[in-house]
Every structure is written in C-alpha cells, then in structure tokens.
Amino acid sequence: MAKEKILVVDDEEDILELVRYNLSKQRYQVVSALSGEIALEKARAEHPDLILLDLMLPGLDGLTVCRELRRDPETSNTPIIMLTAKGEEADIVVGLELGADDYIVKPISPRVLEARIKAVLRRKEHDEEDDASIRIHDLSIYPARHEVLLKGAPLTLTTTEFRILHFLARRPGWVFSRDKIINAVKGEDYAVTDRSVDVQIVGLRKKLGPAGECIQTVRGVGYKFKEPC
Image (cartoon, rainbow, N blue to C red; front, side, top):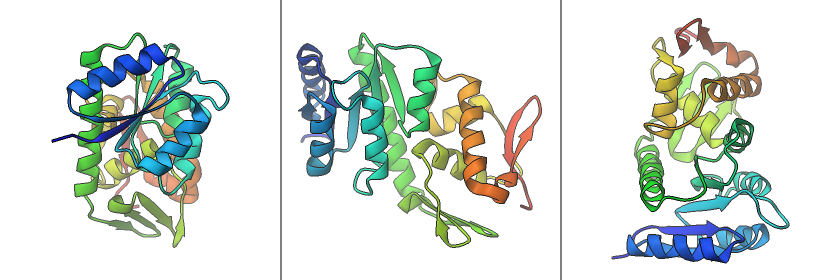
C-alpha cells in the first residue's frame, strides 16, 4: 500500500530523480515540479501530505512559494521541508518565520531525508489528534483547525508560531527552555539556534498585541505562558 503523497520541488532534474527514487523505495507517492509556479499549481491540485521545497528556484523562489502556500487556506497547513544549499542561519530563520516546518541542507542524505519526513508527518498526525480547544480570556486556540482567535477575530500565524503558542498555552505556568520548545514543535535534534526561537516569540507577541504579555521570558531559562493571564 502506498504511503503519503509528497510534492518535490527542485529545478535540478538530477536531484528530482534522486529524491523520487529514494521516496518511491519507501512507497511514498511522489509528485514533482521544476519551478515555483508549477509547485503552486500542483500543491492546489494534488493536495500533497508534505512538500519538499528547494529555496533556489527560477522565477518564484522557494521563500515566495512558501509564503503563498501559507496564505492559501487549501495549503496553509501542509507541512513544508525546505531543501537548500545554504546553511546560513539567516536563510533558515527566514524560512521558519514564513512557516516552513523543517529544512535539509544539500547534498541530501537519503537516511536524513527519510527521518525528517517521518518526523514531520508524525507531528502533523499528532497535531490533528490533539484537537482540544484552549480558551484563555480573550484568546481562543483551535488545534484541529490551526486557528487562533483574539476577541473573536482570527490571527494570521505561521505554522511555527502557532505550534509555539499552543505548546506554551497547553501548560500555563510551566517554564520551558528554548531547546525544549524546539524539540516540542520541531522534533528532536533540530538544528536551530536559540536566536530563532527568540525571533518566533517576538513575532508572536507582536501579533497577539496586549495578549502577548501572557508569554513571559524567564531570564536564563526560557519562556512560559503566564498563569493567570
């Protein structure tokens, strides 16, 4: 029986073929795209369970494609793993801020690729199962719909921002280190620096407005969701 459907986006046919071969061996359904424009079309038509997205694409680059996917209600919750030849922290942080779920630096190791895909799909399944809503004063969080309402008005959050908010709000009063937050929302051994967590928190607080004060910095430790808020 075939596993989940994966859309692979890369302008290098050799890489597409290599990834397709390795994923097919693991019985995944594979759909491919050589450009950002085609990627958007296939993402909406094929409804993949996960997207492997190269950042360096002709025409629409990967970051633009990621932004458009997150804006579209049909693809806003589709997991995205970035494929990039760049290992610089700035590129990684930008991709995560736009809502990417993970990243892999080329050259691609088949074992690493398979492990990252499985981890992201497990998190998606866990998110879908953990659908209990959370209501704290003016803030309502609906995990099953990946929706946050503030005073009844919807907030536009990236996937990572949503997961951080949900993770902290589920355990009000608990203090979590940056490493614990990374492991909880991205999986074990996720190579992201403490700075990227701080960037996500800053963006989240800004979007929450006065409710952002509920997310408190615990100096020298990490963050917590204040109780009561």
